[in-house]
Structure formats: C-alpha cells, structure tokens
Image 1: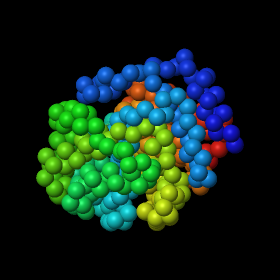
Image 2: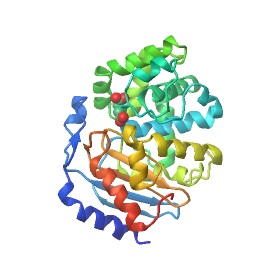
Image 3: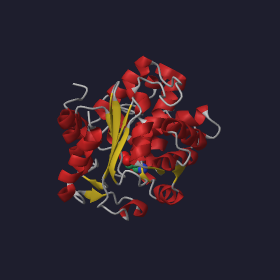
Image 4: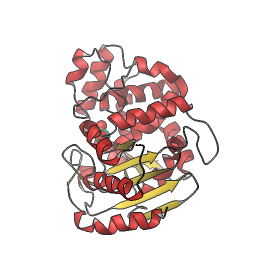
Length: 304
Ligand code: GLU
C-alpha cells in the first residue's frame, strides 16, 4: 500500500476544510493556536514512516496523554485498576460531574477526566517522579528524546483547573483518590501539556498496533490481553460523547485531545496521527475525524 500517496491525496482534497471547527479556548495558551495547521503521519510496524503537511510541528497532546498514563498503570497493576475505574462509555461530556455522584466516585472509564485523574493518581503512587517517568515512557515509545512539557500550557491549565479539582476532591471523598489533590492536578495538567508532533505520536502508538510490545526495543509493556482491553476502551470511549460515531465512521481504536490531535491504529499493521486544531461540537478535531474516515475508506482497511 502506498501510504504516502494516500495521505497526500487526502491532505490535498481537504485543503478547503482547513480552519474549520473551533480551536479550544478554555485556556488562553491553546486559544492562540493557528487553526490553519493540518498534518498527517503514518507509522507502520514494518518500519515505514509517511508524513504530509504540518506533521513535524509540535502541539499540545492533551487527552491523548491519557492513553500513555493508562498503559503505564495497567502494565504495573493489571486488573486491579478496574476496581477504581470502569470501562463503559459515559455518553456525557469529558468533564461531567453528574455520573460520579450516583456511581459512588467510580468514573465510567479511564478517558473521561474523572477516570484519567484516578489513573494519574495511581501513577503517582507508583513513581516518585511521575512526570519524568511519563516523559521517559513516551520518549522510549517514539525514539525521540525531545519530548517535553510545555510549561506555559501547564500553567494555564492549572489556573483553569477548578472543575478538575472538583472532580478530584469529590472522588477523594469516596476514597478513590489517594494522593494530595493539588499535586495530582499539577501532574495531570502537566501530562495534558506535553508537546508532540504527528510523527512522534504515530510512532508512539505502534506498541498498541504491536499488541503491547514496543517495536523499537522489543520490550513487552502490556500483555496481549491488556493491549486488547486498552484498544477496546479506546474504541468505545476514546472520543468523548462522539465515540460511537467515530467507530462508525473510521472503524479504529483511537484517542483524541482538545489540542486537535487524534491518534488511531490498526492492530498488527500501523498507527496514524492527524492534527488539525479546529474542533467539532464534541471536542474532537473536525478535520481529524474526516481524515481518519477517509483514510480507512481509501486503504480499505480498519478493524472491521
Ligand atoms: N486538559 C484538559 C482538561 O482536563 C484535557 C482536555 C482534553 O483533551 O480532553 O480539561
């Protein structure tokens, strides 16, 4: 398959859609992002890397970071994590408080904010320096040492973290957050503020396409069963309250972030990262979703 030609065609055909959607503006540091940027990168397990457009420009990975923290925690504590977080789609916005009340502080899944906060809390219990451990994990996945936290974005996140603080304190009242909430919010805001580009991201998801083994060094990070479960949760919960529609359109497990990035993969084959900062009303990259739908259509391949 000529992936380079496929993504170049998509990029060309979608030029007129660049800038569509609404750039995330809940923090000033993201609101300044140029909406006209559009990059695509494909990485294959055979070692190929294909890119087009703004695939080398770094952006804020935001909720895509939730996949990395979850993989680290799942790799360490295994099935124990399911005692503290569920695996059902929430059907609610990513930062909703309502469900937590009647579900006794157990978040629906690891990709809504409440669930991601629980996962980051467990990461803090596992590592003395959780931010550094997370950065090292991502660097080893993409083979790039130049992965860092954008401190400006992190600061802006912390200054607007009232709802995440509320979620964390609420869950702490149920005993589902073990660490200090201020420190937890700092780690969480920092993970959201990690900067990566599409090439880094497509490579860093290859371990999922490779059923839990980092293809760069052969290290097994997740069991085959854990990798299957993580993929299933990405398919059902990776796109906020648009997860069903994304599965319907693209047919791939993946994760989006409000920075406009989406990463998805085909098990045993490849991973693909798209970045276009304009979001649709569900908080997913508008052009990113269209690109992935078109990609699986053009290559006649998905998980279905
Ligand atoms: N930093 C964002 C928040 O927790 C993450 C949003 C996202 O990408 O879903 O509010």
